[in-house]
Length: 150
Image (cartoon, rainbow, N blue to C red; front, side, top):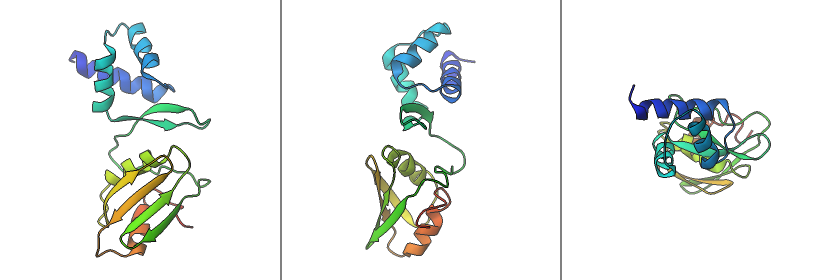
């Protein structure tokens, strides 16, 4: 296995197994495992691995792998999110810190009704295809947010 592939696997394992909140912490863990890497290389690695920061249960931001093979259900039954519409746009209101993850999942899941998204901290703007109904959009989004508008 090449150094890069090995390093990628170790980074994935660390992020999956531990709550790591910043690059310095991750860099120290890699050095402890005798993996020599610069901060610039680690930053590129995180970008290539599509690692993002998401809030954990206590509200602290931690690294998480965002690339997945299937759409993930990204909220629990206790998380209430709303979707409202204006013409061919929709707005999802979320908890603070959740919008980027939701937008990523929407953009990387095939939805026949959605052209794309723009995310803030607690708001996702959805651009719908013109020929789609609002009910079709809601039904598709329920694949990843089961409790939207319930």
